[in-house]
Image 1 (cartoon, rainbow, N blue to C red):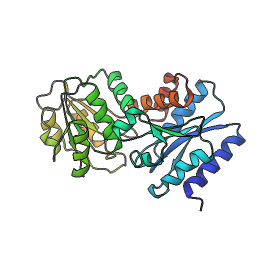
Image 2: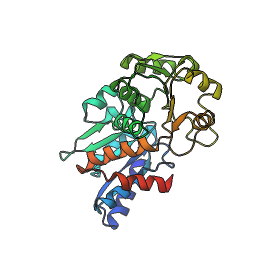
Image 3: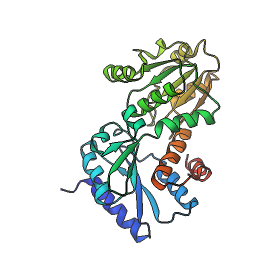
Length: 293
């Protein structure tokens, strides 16, 4: 039986081919209505003179993930991005992982090889570090609080370890998931964000804040306690589609802060290069995001 996801892929392919687009890539997730990736990647293809390429968003239920991944091979897609909630679950359906994705245990980019095999990558980690670099912030020697323990959080923690963070505390509502993440990378678990006192970097790597009406992932009081004693504390929220309550609190407190648009840009540029083998037109991608944000 054809799933909703595969039907959507077939429809997108038909539409793209009618417009002379023979190379399809996209994003699998749920939800995907907020994603800016199609605008960013299609601007990249246009700037690079790759008129045959097209990027589309596909809402994929967890129960349909296996069929959706199989459709990449069946319909000869060049690859896809993977977003919440599939970054860990998708691994079982892939032929192989690159070394960094295997170490992290989460995939956000899939490329289809000439032999038809599907290889999983993680560009979230590199995108996160490039976003911090763009903000002029280095995690080297810093204490860090990471809120969340899913696929994005795993990439963030791995990235921070590679850049010399002195201590990483993980806080998540699912204590067992937080414990597994902490054990994998030599981090520690805290049952409350306010226990991570002195954090020079506070990261929201959870989906909290993505939807209008979401509560603050931590109160202003907790943010004040956590950042106390840290010189030039920085708050980074991976959510990019709106200014979250966390970022509003950081702004009111005079803390340096940024939303996830920079990470989206840089992880997307890395994915573009994996799929196409060409340098990403970063300025065109950045302009597309700024026009949509």
